[in-house]
Image: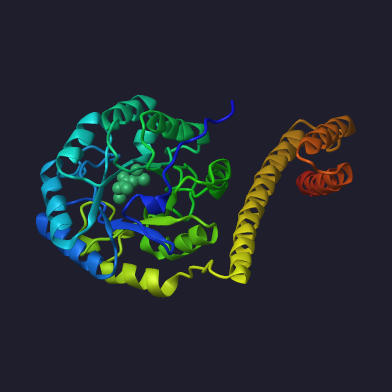
Length: 367
Ligand code: PEP
Ligand code: MN
């Protein structure tokens, strides 16, 4: 089904973000105490942050973890807004949260990954936000389901939310990977190519899960041309009641933004070219990683088949099976605009390596 067009207000017309990139939303994972909110907000304001985040209601995996202060913490946010001239932002997961936020002058809300995955809740929130002008950012759902993500955007947009954007925070995975959530950048790239006008933030904190990887993820996000970053920052991260490992102090955030990441200027023609080519190359790098990952996974299965053949005393090569595979990929390749000789060469090389691997398995048996 073709996606509906979204009716959007450009990011720099929301009244809270200005160029140059990146637009930053920063603040603690959770609002914990008035002192922590005020001290963090002060530190962030001093480094030039305008949009201050803090979680008020926290969707935690296990019961018994700190689940946020709830509505009373909105008063602290309101105080930070007044004292430091910050815009304030928090996560909403129900109609009740929306009403509380409107009561306390919250300037931007976002839907968390667990909420985006639930169309009933998204609809409830969209209905509650109807007739307000409040900007909404939608995090990706926990699972890499692009349509579910787009569906949430469509529900909000149909309710008249035009200051609408997304936050990519990676996807849950059972595999052991270096990050807390799997970036699967190809999903973000696909969304960007379907909706080039949709304001795009990346949340390196939840993607990384630990502060060591925040720089590389932020850089990649800038290299891909995304507009914004949502980064968790706490005045005293080691004492944080949630996500302690992934929060930066305001001075660490300052160092990241002003010294460690490179934002390419798009002022002059030649620089614009450079930025575009870098973005394209960053996409190619990700696709190459995905190709290698797919080849590795294929090889693992191929070895399993080798074992299976060995145990059942079956020969390695069944040429009719390979002919059928080749015919299928060549036909599929046409759909993707790939010449037949290219597809044949690539798949013959893959097949050769598989046969070799299976051969090793069988000959090990003969020792
Ligand atoms: C958060 O931003 O504090 C949060 C809970 O994030 P996510 O929905 O990405 O897990
Ligand atoms: Mn968090």
